[in-house]
Image (cartoon, rainbow, N blue to C red; front, side, top):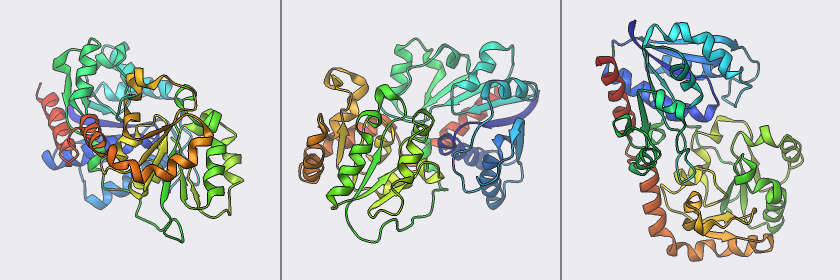
Length: 371
């Protein structure tokens, strides 16, 4: 087995900011260590190659996974159509078997150590944050280490049966991501900006029942600018979404994004004056700088008795569409009532956001090599 490390960039672009800062930190700590970045599409290849080249990372190689897709028109970083993950992983297994440590940011890749007799040590770093986090899956326990942002996440996994020695708190890796989309002026005026960010899973999302009407009511009101950038997987579950967005073309006061890398790199959470959504973990990133929030209870959730909706204590909750605009109007006025909770919630959910998390994660990789 070769003393080298592999990072798996095989999935959606939303995973990249949770993984790439660890690559940078690892190279800084161990500049002579060979590192392979396995990619599934030419979009990943183009994006990562530019960053590696610009940083002068001579020990890092970009490698095409079996089943690699060469795509036209995705060089800007928008989410690409992906090859089937499991066939790609199992074709990749012989290469990874000759690698000492593999780092991934999703559970699917853990099918390999869960089902094959590999000596390779897999390290899984959580992506996303907040009360909707996955509580663990049996295949996650096949990894050598699971890296989580905050002690709350660690406690949840341990309570679910994970070995405490396997769960390591690093802080929020994405907070150190430096390759964000450059700020651009999205709107011609200085109206307050609402960021509407519905979840992609129907049982957690406001989109199917209230989404289009929510957008229309905000635009008809005319006092706000709107960034409509849902979870990037929503379009998979709601194919009519593209036609809806196309119908908004040319209208003032709205910026729609279903594809670009800005959807996942933190650009929109930084630009917003008010967060409007349901259960997406992006609200937690938004709350690293406390600002008004409004949550849409489109599915009549009994949210006060459900820990999965803990984030809804960070702002006003709308139970009927008729209350949408009045609630948005008063959000800034009532915001001081929620500031203390927002600060506490973000700290509990994300842990350390100082930028040191990738270094802690990289040191776990080094520890795996030494074992």
